[in-house]
Image (cartoon, rainbow, N blue to C red; front, side, top):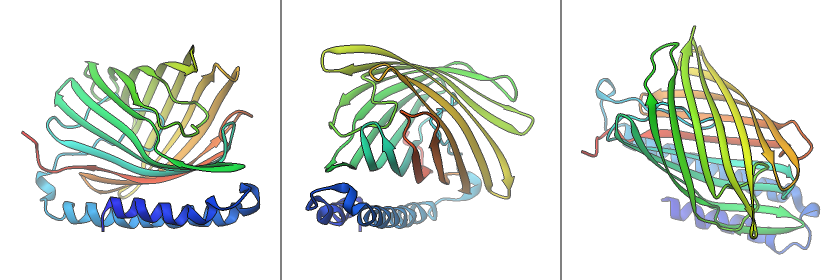
Amino acid sequence: MNLAWNYIESRRAFSAVNCQHRWSSDRRSVLRASWKVLLRFALLSLAIVSSSAAQSVDSDEPEANPGRPTVSTPATLTPVGYLQFETGALGASHSPEFSTRFGLNELMKLAVAPRLEFITSAEPFVHAADGTTMNGTGEVFLGAQAVLSHGESARPTIAASYFRRVFDGGVPELDFGSPRNSVLLLASADVKGFHYDANAILNEQTQGVVHRVQFGQTLSISHAIAGKFSVSGEIWHFTQPFLRGNAVGNLWAVNYLARKTLVFDAGFNRGLTSTSTRWEAFAGFTYLLPHRLW
């Protein structure tokens, strides 16, 4: 069993839906198929990471630094020389570009120095529907993040990052769109048992030959609740220059620290404006390979 097999099975699960003339008459069948794909994806992911994690010794493990599932990105980097994977699935409904959308997402991080990290983000599979259905591949982004000032405890770590879209799959996007270029200013700190990640975002949005500037702000706060569980709450906002609107959402998630290198997550997001995606549900994991690359 491998990810390629899972991708083929997901295409089969949706093939019957593609034969329908209208999505509205078969919404339940598509949702059932989406949840089947999500379940298979979760079981496969659990088997892979559990097998890999069993080979390492907990006391010698470095610590993963999850960026998912919040919109906010932490200013702190992953351990130098260790490859981190952030893998998940997201289902969404009622957005300006679609009635439903289901996608698998992958993000890889590698810190090559205490102040520099390289990042790759991709959606290998997306299914969307709005009267007609579409299966395809989402965007691929390449980027880097640099720490400008190391913080400790309540003194925040400050960082900046840049991302460039290198591939556009042409599938419908979420309410804040897909930037061609993106610049972020990030801050993270711990205050009285609470951790926060705050981002200020400047994006270049395109539509044909027209280019517009998009502004975004995010604030995520997390806190340990019981044992290895923690909860995160987030508020985020993006301007929508082509819709002349604003996308605002409220996200809640639960994380489970299975071990230092493995963190599971699940949660939902509720859109708060008329042009926001109304509902999003997601699940996934962050896995830091326990063996240093150099």
